[in-house]
Length: 139
Image 1 (cartoon, one colour):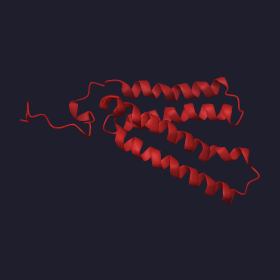
Image 2 (cartoon, helix red, strand yellow):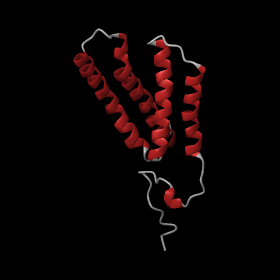
Image 3 (cartoon, helix red, strand yellow):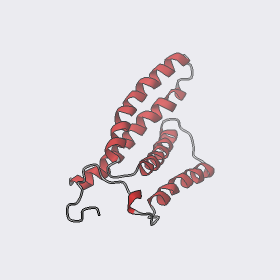
Image 4 (tube, helix red, strand yellow):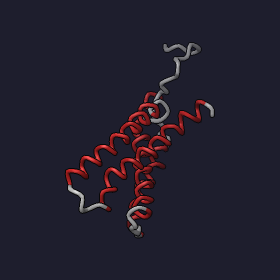
């Protein structure tokens, strides 16, 4: 895999896996309502630790390729997709049209955040591994 391809897809893969952990941390206990709340909080915190072990590197490594805003929007969309699968497959819930419409509005944010707004070059994120050009030194 090329470095460019890896730098684009690695953060996304880490975001997906981290969101699976976080969804279980936040909602997995709903199948075990008889468990004491203190135990549920402790178990959720333990699961969330692994989410952080993946989310932090995803954002750190991804910020060289994506802006912080792009990473956040991607994370929200991934969260929704993971949650939809979780709600249907794990909790046995049915998604209704209004749920899907609301999710679609959030997913549309990906389109808008990726639009080129025609801003100046200083608005763009510089990859962490890039070197300043010696061909055109700043004036």
